[in-house]
Length: 142
Image (cartoon, rainbow, N blue to C red):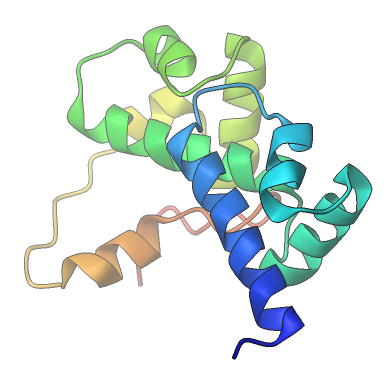
């Protein structure tokens, strides 16, 4: 039998999964709160307590993670990537990208970093995953 806390955490995980699936869509707090079966204010509060960031910040970070992957692997323009990951404004995309990653999207794409092949993929993803707003990872790996 699951405790009430476990059930609440499972519902929050379902809501976070919904954000992950629809990262390119506008954030709908009301729908996410319904998934978690709580009020909107309680959802925002418990999401931040559980995951360490608000749903909006989580969504922004997920969008930036996807943009980073597209910048590394596609030939789409920065503007096309901006729209692809769900940002309505290129200026907001660039500002958010700089806050999270520590450089502009164009600089990120242009950096000359040789791929490391001897490191497991899970470590590489952890190193390149943006941590949170205002805490950009170093541009060069240790």
